[in-house]
Image 1 (spheres, rainbow, N blue to C red):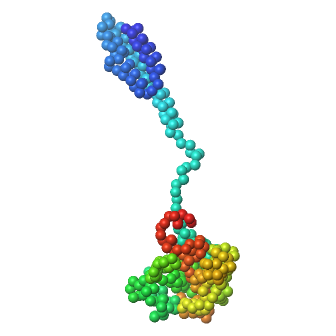
Image 2: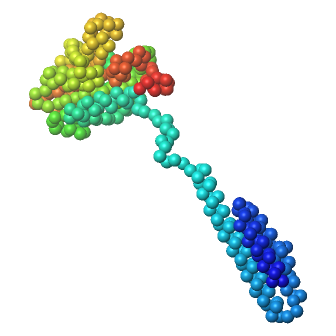
Image 3: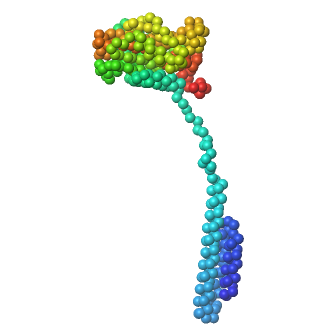
Length: 343
């Protein structure tokens, strides 16, 4: 029996050493240690040995053989599993030094880009960006701005009234009044710009819309003149259209400024030489401006005998159309990615 046990051990150890896969080792475990294995068959003859001592000796040897085979199986299985894991990791490895697949990302809408650029220009000059409510009362939107009852700007065809005294603001000038009363409270200087959405009842076409964006500027202090206004406008438009931009002020009328002026900028398309866009004049109109009317200063809590100020306002869409040669205002709200991706 001893020779049989040693032969089983020798055969098993030799075969186990040739295993190349973990699955094969599992098959060998059944083959050499299972209930029907050669080892079990040999040990099944222990009861036929003539003496107790022989049965004890062969039983002990059988346990040694079993442990040797089991240990060899465990060691070979661990070795193969380690190699298989290494091979799988190598096959599935990722070179982290390679650049990743770029994910598509969005960008700011052109209107936000232009608005941000305007804000940055004025912030660099020491101005503050002020915002206020879109749903406004008649007093802040009209009366405090020296627009009396019966003025054409109050026509229901121009404004979205919610009630007799509440409407969607028609300009961002309401922010100027609220800032003077609620933030500045009589202090000087006041240096703000007021960007935001405004609403007017208008038919939409290539140059008009019922919802659009404005930016208004306001400066109040002692000794403020039209020269300060033109200096600020020149700096602003040069920041938008380039250092060659020139500003022209033409006499006009607005109820909230006196004197009032239309703002023109040298045509960014022809450099002021005359073209189809500027109708050969060399200038394009941007918006309105002027010295803050004394009644507006009083409504804001300031004494027009002590301080003066200037204000301006224009549509951000119009500036964007001129700066980027866009022919139709409706492109800004179309959602057409072919248009948006250009900017």
